[in-house]
Amino acid sequence: MDSALFDVIIIGSGIGGLVTATQLAAKGAKVIVFESYLIPGGSAGYFQSQGYTFDVGASMIFGMGNKGTTNLLTRALDAVNVNLETIPDSVQIHYHLPNGLDLKIDRDYETFLQNLIAYFPQEAKGIRRFYDECQKVFNCLNNIELLSLEEPKYLLRVFLKNPLACLGLAKYLPLNVGEVAQKYIQDPQLLKFIDIECYCWSVVPADMTPMINAGMVFSDRHYGGVNYPRGGVGKIAEKLVTGLAQLRGEIQYQARVTKIITKQGKAVGVQLANGQIYYGKKIVSNATRWDTFTKLLPAQEMPVKEKNWQQRYIKSPSFLSLHIGVKAFVLPVGTECHHILLTDWQEMTTATGTIFVSIPTLLDPDLAPPGYHIIHAFTPDWISNWQGLSESEYTDKKEIAAGQIIDRLAAIFPGLDAGLDYLEIGTPRTHRRFLQRIDGTYGPIPKRKLWGLLGMPFNRTVIPNLYCVGDSTFPGQGLNAVAFSGFACAHRIGVDLQLRK
Ligand SMILES: NC(=O)c1ccc[n+]([C@@H]2O[C@H](COP(=O)([O-])OP(=O)(O)OC[C@H]3O[C@@H](n4cnc5c(N)ncnc54)[C@H](O)[C@@H]3O)[C@@H](O)[C@H]2O)c1
Ligand SMILES: CC(C)=CCC/C(C)=C/C=C/C(C)=C/C=C/C(C)=C/C=C/C=C(C)/C=C/C=C(C)/C=C/C=C(\C)CCC=C(C)C
Image (cartoon, rainbow, N blue to C red):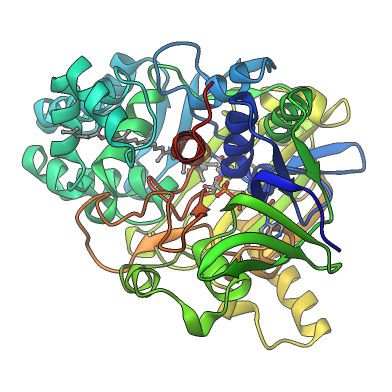
C-alpha cells in the first residue's frame, strides 16, 4: 500500500534518530519516524516493573548542562520547546581499582586533580598538563556552533568566526589519548588509570580512544557536569517525541523497517514488516551501519566504502546487565551514583572484567518504591558467549553469571544478598532483541590503532538520499555524541532539501 511523500523518513527513534527528526521538523520538514519497539529511545529507553523504573542503558548523561555549545541534549530539547528538569551529580564516577586506587571524580576540576595527585604526587605536573590539554580540546568545541562537517559553507563560516578553535580541532582530529598522555605521564599505574578513564565510555584503552571525544568527556564532567534527567533517562526521548508531535512530526511504534527501497541506485522509501511502503525524499537510518547495509539493503551489494569501514571498525562487545532492586540499607552512607570495579588491570578489557554500576535512585528516589533503590550493574560481554544454548542452558547460565556479579558487588555492597528485592538479567541476546542492534553491540570500536576520529564516517552515504545517524557515524558512542550526529545529519539534509528555516 503506498502513501504520501514525506520529506524525511527516519528509521529508529534512538537519540540520534530523534534529534535528527526534531531538528528537521523545526526546520519545517514533513518527517516520520518508524520505531520497531513500543517506546522511543533505543538504548536510552526504560522499562518498568514492580514499582521500579529502570534505564536500559547507563545513566551517566553528558550534554545536559546549561551553558556553552556542547550541551547538545539541552539544545535539542530547547529547539522543540520542551524542557526537562535535571539533577546534578557531584561525582562522575567512584573508581574501585587494583592496588587500592580508590578515587572519586569530583565535579570540581581542581578537587579532582588534587585527589588524583594525592595518589601520584611525583606526577603532579604531568597530570595537570594532560587534563589541561583535554580542556583545550573542549574549549575549541565549546566555542563554535556544532553542525555538519560535510557542509562547506558552515565550515567556512565557523572558520572565519573562530579560526583558532577550528585549527585546534583540526590538529586533534587524528590524535588518540594514549599518545598525548604518554607525553606527560610516565608512571605505568597512572597510565593504566588513563586507560580505564577511556575504556569506561569508549570500550577501548587510551591508545585507541580519539582525543576529541576524551576532550569532551574529561572536561564536560567539570563544566556542564553529569546531570540526571528527573523521571529517568527515558524522559529525554519522551520529551523529544512531545516536541516532534507539536511540530506535526509523526512517529509510529511497533513499525519495524525491513527494507530500504531504492530506485536507480537512489534511496526512495522504506517497507515495513507489515508490508506497508512509505516514500520519502531523504531516508535516514538510525540502525547501526552493519544492520543498515546487511539487513535493510542487500548485503551482497554493500558499497566498497562500507566494506572499507568494516575493515577499520569492529563491533564492540555487548553487555551482561543486572537490573536490581534493593532495600535501602544495602547502600552504605555516602554511596555515589556511578561506580567502576576492577580487581586486576589484566582483566580490564576482557569479557566481564570491569563492572559498571549506576544507582540512579540516589539522584531521583521516585524511580523505586519508598525505602528501595535501583542498582544497575553491567559488564561487557560477547554474544558468542551466549549463543548455541538450549532454553534451560541459557536460563542456568544467566543465573550463574548474575550470581558471580552479585558476589563481586559485595566488595562495595556487603549487604546486597540480604537486601535483594528484584532481579532482571539481560544478556547480549536481550540487547540484540530489544534494541535491534546486531550482536547487541554497544557500538563500533577501532579494529586497530587508527588516526583518532578521521576514520569515522559522517552522515551521507554513497547511496544518494540515504543518510546514517547514531553511534556508527562521527563522533561515535554516547548520547551527547549521537545528539551531535543528529544535529549534523539534520543540518546536511536541511541544506540538501533547501529548507529555509
Ligand atoms: N551515557 C549513557 O549512559 C548512555 C545510555 C544509553 C545509551 N547511550 C548511548 O546511546 C548510543 C545509541 O544511540 P543511537 O541513536 O545510535 O541508537 P540506538 O541504538 O539507541 O537506537 C536505535 C533505535 O532504532 C530502532 N531500530 C533499529 N532498527 C530498526 C528498524 N529496522 N526499524 C525500526 N526501528 C529500528 C531501535 O529499536 C532503537 O530504538 C549508544 O552509543 C550508547 O553509547 C549512552
Ligand atoms: C575548517 C577547519 C580548518 C577544520 C575543521 C575542524 C572542525 C571544525 C572540527 C570539528 C569537530 C567537531 C565538531 C567534533 C565534535 C565532536 C563531538 C561532539 C564529540 C562528542 C563526544 C561525546 C562523547 C564521546 C561522549 C561519550 C559518553 C559516553 C559514551 C558515556 C557512556 C557512559 C557509560 C557507558 C559509562 C557508564 C559508567 C558507569 C555506570 C560507571
